[in-house]
Length: 186
Image (cartoon, rainbow, N blue to C red; front, side, top):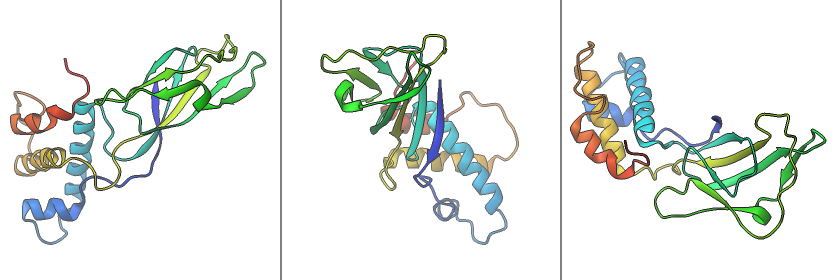
């Protein structure tokens, strides 16, 4: 179970860039275009199983595992907190116990390192372990094919404002641009 705690990065696409792409001048449709930007961002993040904006995520777990598989790729571990047997929240010294496993593709696993025994947990709590980490791209570093796919999607939304039947949620050109960055494939 994961939740976004905070978003510190800026959106990968600005309203100005989208207006240039669509060749729109004036501000009459700014609200509508922002809705399209937000929709494209959400759709792309769901498709890629990644957050594009730099943000902090909290995930909870039932136990200390030898490997925590997180929802999103990890830039850095912020903290690992847990409730001990006395029902008191404690913070683990991350570097003594865990590190991010970099498999050069997803970086969404935290592995136990060293020989230290993990502390005992309050077992009456369903999810006594909380891992907080940073994920997403640093401002200005979202890959250009992802930006292009978002622009294509926004162009499609802008030109076809009514609901119509799609063969797929993401059109072929956008999908081809996004697939190399997708973490999970079905």
